[in-house]
Length: 118
Image (cartoon, rainbow, N blue to C red; front, side, top):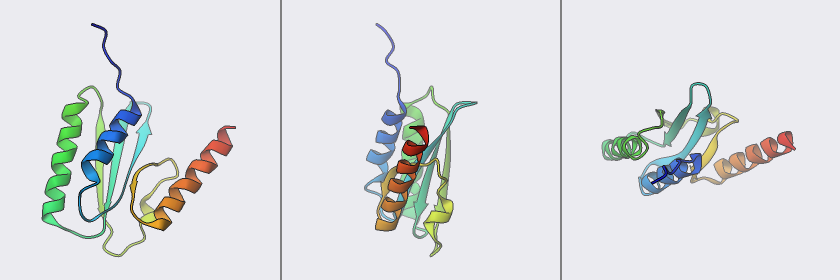
């Protein structure tokens, strides 16, 4: 039987599925590093909450088990009132954005990237 390839969208879909029910998640996004190949998963939390952090760690372990051929790097940021936009690189691909300003930021970043590649 031929092997089925994993896509970046498969990974992003799993991240969205596992993190969307977690309280305190303001945003989650991914970035892709090509050499060496690695998916970086970023989670922005509005505050410290042990139960949320435990569930986040479980989701990260599940992601690594679901895609064992992929190298991952995970970063969680506790915003504690700080502006989340300062933690989002231009190359980020949105997975979850729970605030209007974040949705606008990701939409504008995507439009900029599409225009640059056209």
